[in-house]
Image 1: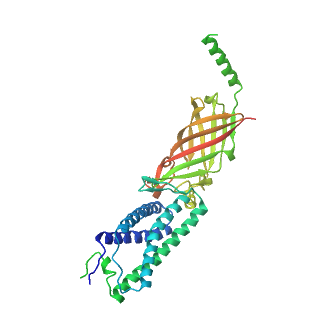
Image 2: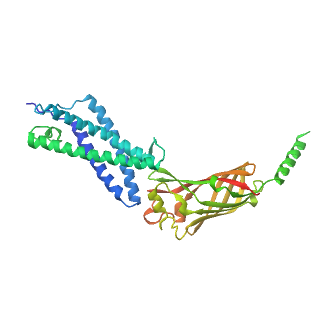
Image 3: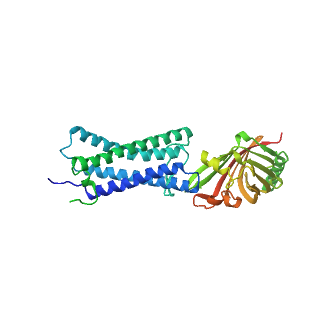
Length: 179
Length: 187
């Protein structure tokens, strides 16, 4: 049987964003607990710049994805499992868009404009409003924990495909060829 | 009438209005504001002070005789976030326990143009005194007047933000101060 792999572009975007998003998540958890200091302000700025970058990348990724269908899921999967996989991937894309947007809106509502790399100001959609800022902080957090939960499912499913189903779903996304 | 006559008439009117000129002596705290803008990681952040007071002796027609004394309660700061407010009262910033107030005492006021003046004087913050010059507009409206001006203060000159904060990479040295006062004429 022909083993359909993802294209190199798809593989590069997938793993590149995986690293960026996991780093953003971990840094986000870390910086929130830091004592107020220049380092904290610097890390917040870097986190915002990386978040804007992630948003731009997901937009490019979606544009690319519209014109390049991924290889089909294995025929051995049931209709329900396939549906589950599509919903899971859809949720991941949705969160990849919603999380940076919520971060940007939260920052505006807290009175801190996002200035990309310290030079390109991104307009504030919201004006300063403490209550709204706190609400958006909760939204940003909930969306992130949702993403983390779905990611656990995503990784679990990939491992299950590889170990239990013994199909090529994980292998075809790996950057290196296995066989 | 020729030009000379007109000139003397106008001069006479100006003298007459000068004679009636009012002296402004206080500010309306509830209608006055003191805002500032500082850059943090390249991001302009707005802040303000809520408690301040000023005593004036300002007659717009005699700026040379003017005197301004200004006092600011540093604990009344809003530096843009709760975290920042807690931080700036501390020792590295304003050290408000030891230095609760900033003061300004004018040494000279001069007129730049119609309704435009410039005040120079001694600004004291955190035990350090520096000369400051600020241009402002003065717009009289009956018994009150609007005073609007701004200047740039360098935080390093007053040791505002020491130690970890002394570097300007995170918080810039220049702080833009914008003041808007409503002054009252002597009653």
